[in-house]
Length: 318
Image (cartoon, rainbow, N blue to C red; front, side, top):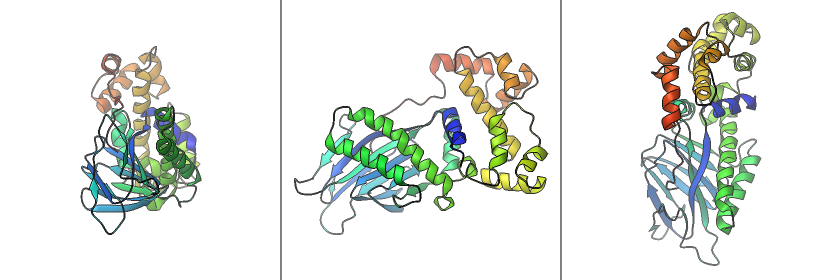
């Protein structure tokens, strides 16, 4: 898979993996919470934990496993024991890293929680790319980087070291990237749309062309020829894999790029239009308004004043 394409899309929608809390719990335990973010991360650094979403979807995570919950309204995490009364606890915003019920001789379960932070334009893109629950196992192919990152994060949490929050902040981004790489490569994990498409060997040559030159007036024949497929076969495979036709995908990339550039100082709309394949500023403005609901000038004004489309980082329960 061409990871430069993955990086480019993640940059366009300003994706960040945020580790916002965690706990080390011994014995029988249970915690419940309502996710504040649509895309929730739960990772087990040591031991094991059961994760139940909306009271019905349950998965057992072992050390090194990571789950992403997409659009779930309630989450329960508990130990995987079978006997004894569970101690229920909650994570407070003023103490997001908690030690519960662990004795000096007992190895606690270490669970880290966080979320995927993404700008407004990218929320739908990320939500469409992931199933309701995806679990990446430490035993997955190419998961050695994921295991290493999670082990480091668990060690930082358990050790309560100086600079822990900074390490967790940086590590959260690496953790998310490792997970997305694996989901993109492994069709059994349920990744769809652009995320799955980036690892399709047949479509990759055409995607290379699209990503390399957003300003070119690409024809379906050109893209099909690059993929060594007939026009109809290419269009069918592209739409089935990425969830939208090539022209719609190209337009989406152009508009995501436009949003990003318009939030930057010094970007001239008259220069942006031809760079993104539009014959005039008015043609670009009309396309942007259809997609975003605002003119480019109005979007830039509001973005500058209110940071439109940028989610602020929030501390939420793990």
